[in-house]
Length: 245
Ligand code: NAD
Image 1 (tube, rainbow, N blue to C red):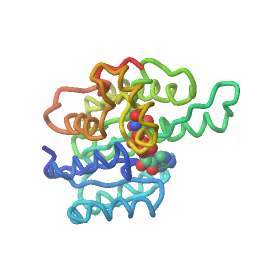
Image 2 (image 1 turned 120 degrees about the horizontal axis):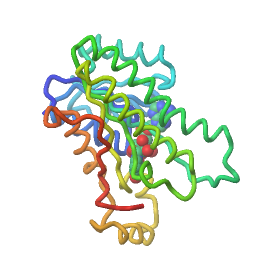
Image 3 (image 1 turned 180 degrees about the horizontal axis):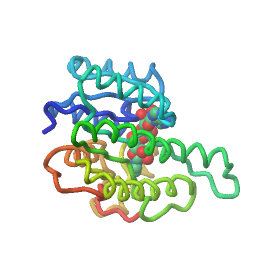
């Protein structure tokens, strides 16, 4: 579905991001794993050795326009284009409002929304020159419902939805589609580390009776990256088994 395309996946070293990287490689794309540290990027690449001709790693500061632009230039040098930008990197916390520091709030907003702006801008500049492309952002179920602690995280995901819908309208004329994926509870390392009773309790509240797997979410990222979604832009696609928080 993605043969001949080049995709950059931020936070591609583990969890949902790594599942997207694999899914895109399986579907023929060249894939760039963007992580926060060289060490974790290299560890991820080591697990993808069968695709070594179609995969590379970068680790720019995602909030630095200059560093992101330079990293995307290196991608173009290697693969010739940037067709799909996946802004997946994200961090979360559950701190209550009374203990929330401004530093923590800023840290969450930096990676969850400022980096999305920086990477979207850098990618769009390249895509416009190429005649089009696709940007996909990581939202969340809590970007619709909020959550009862850790207010910075849902606030950042509401902002992701706003950026997604606005950029979809602004960039359509340049042939660039912009969408978001909003997973529910997904079985990444974080969820796998929870006690079984807790996972059972969470699962019982999900109409489909189980948490999502990273691959469930990666399938949505595949649809939105491919021409199968050629007239889809500005949506926040829920992948949550009909969960409602
Ligand atoms: P994860 O913690 O397993 O992975 C997050 C990734 O982001 C890691 O690869 C990490 O290295 C990267 N990252 C964090 N800070 C970074 C930085 N400063 N620079 C570069 N990379 C950085 O998380 P996940 O569960 O796979 O979540 C991926 C995305 O999906 C996030 O945006 C998250 O908010 C969203 N999401 C996850 C769930 C879930 O249940 N797992 C639900 C809804 C939304």
